[in-house]
Length: 146
Image (cartoon, rainbow, N blue to C red; front, top):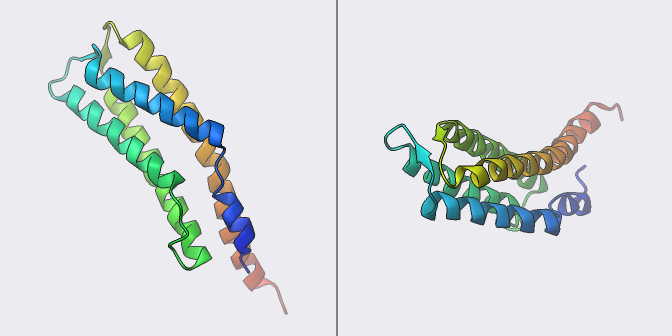
């Protein structure tokens, strides 16, 4: 049986981490839009901006309340799906950023992107493990003899 208090607690994200991620994302998007980044491939810079926006949207979705979802199991599945989507969009962003060339703002952008990535992955790995563990416990309880 899923514990609703435990599930609710698993959606409590560290506010300092959430704030840091929002600030890092804002700075990355500011550099991507207003800064001087260069990518040799035609159309890659607008794609980089789009990927950054997708990561921001998926990050927002990760932090969003799931109270509107009536079933606790579905809340966990939604959170895991959102986390996977965030990972995918982060990977797409990284692939696009590989083509960055030396430019005035690259020295700030690259390390900031790396720190942003590491913070996201640490956050989602911790919460994914909690969510998956809760879902798995449901199946292990069903396998126990009564």
